[in-house]
Amino acid sequence: MQEAAPKKDPMEWEVLGTEYLFNRPWLTARRDHVKLPTGVEIKEFYVLEYPEFCNVIAITTDGKYLLERQYRHARRLTAMEIPAGCVEEGEDPMEAAKRELYEETGYAGGQWTHLMTICPNAGACTNLSHTYVARGVEKVSSQHLETTEDIKICLVDEQEVIRMLKNDEFQQAMMVAPLWKHFAMEGKI
Image 1 (cartoon, rainbow, N blue to C red):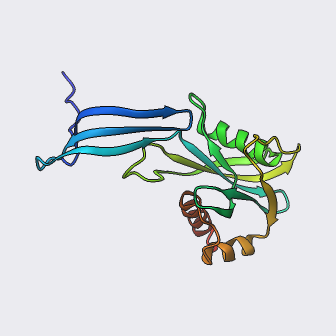
Image 2 (image 1 turned 30 degrees about the vertical axis):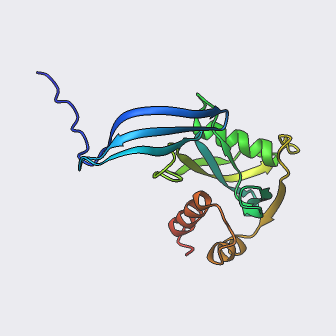
């Protein structure tokens, strides 16, 4: 007996053509010519192809949350964030998260669980953002920062992180959503 082909989503757009505008290691931009199910054609729909991201909600052996303070040039602000970075091609997202935590903070170990995977901006970007919770991490090394990174490590009490979250002190949406989910699942908010 032959298996039925999966049904096509009736809302899916048909791609009539694609032109790559530029391709860089951390960003590729393309222009798609698409046709909507209604028959309307959009000749210039722009799509950004980023690598996948990973985030870590890292909690030390003494219950402190490991946060980072760093400058974000696109928004021209210094932001408080959870450790994060890009997943390299072919790399497992959890392994990337462990690598980023170690490189950016010098912390490692602990018990790791997957919290969530979300689309940072499904309307324009192709990538996913994977978030993990690492409980019981310990300082094992100094930071191993890239030349473009200047990261200050902050060890913060749980109640202070919740206060910061409620007061919009975290600016990265793909970090805010996992923090809210983490504290909601813990029954803290």
